[in-house]
Amino acid sequence: MSVIEQVIFVGTGCSSNTPALKCLLEKKPSCKVCLSALSEQGWRNRRKNPSVLIRVRDHKDPQGRLRNILVDCGKTFYRMVQLSATFSQSALDIFPRYDIQELDALILSHGHADAMLGLDDLRSWTSGGRLQTSVPIYLNEETFEVVSRAFPYLVNKANATGGGEVASFTFNVIKANESFEIAGLDIVPLPVHHGIYMQTKEPYWCFGYRFGKQVSCITDANYVPPETMEKMKDSDMLIVDCLREDPYPSHFGYHEALALVDELKAKDNYFIGMAHNLEHGDLEQRLAEYSAMHNLNVRPAYDTLKVDISSNGETTESTWRC
Image (cartoon, rainbow, N blue to C red):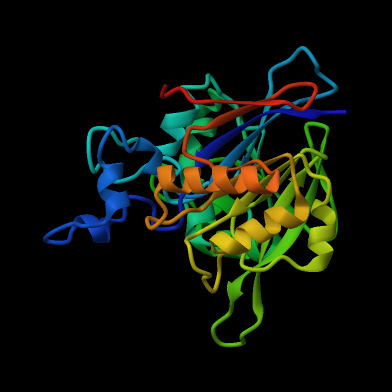
């Protein structure tokens, strides 16, 4: 059986990132978190679009390299505005630093810009076949339609213009009620609500994913249906959306995210998707106090956080930054 040995947080912010440009462009900037993010001491407050790298030991190749499964590659996956010399890009922050070359699969949660707008940047992996010839992509039908409209040349190279040097992908359309396998790891889609369509008021469906028995990851959600909750039971690790203190129409707020943690009671729990009104140090302290009171282990993730998982399920956190 394939097992997860590492989880790396590529991005832990929301769609608009932290620091928020609107805060920095004020005549007298006053946002505590955004100002902190500009300092070297406040680097944990620098957050890019949600993205998680799952690193798997393939049971068919136990002595081989870890297989790399990326969840989402949004607007900040490779490039972002250089607001200061201390800023960096998600891919450049993670892959060279942790000596990771190959992308064995990309799984998309939904068709919003913060989840899929970095697709074009994956040409770095497939250009000239230097790293690999293609990247397998797993996504639902609705997300595939969005990708087809946004990047027609990535779906069909006949639509390419210019020099025609574009990323090479193999698209795999998945269904909400069917599991699939990557590197010997069973992956179960976790359908959740991520807001509503403004015209019809019908829920907009986003996919979280359960990776084997170990990790359940929900990057964007404001409601988890009971049948999805059932699929998440007995996860060792829960990664869950937490946008801000108060509820939001398309994301969990602080108390809603904690309610999910309370119900599932995973051994390790991480918040991601935080906006600029949640300061890392403050949130870390609050969650530590909550964890002590409720016999849980809940922490805010941060960009570049690496969690190693031992054979007995024990976790160790580290980052190349310190």
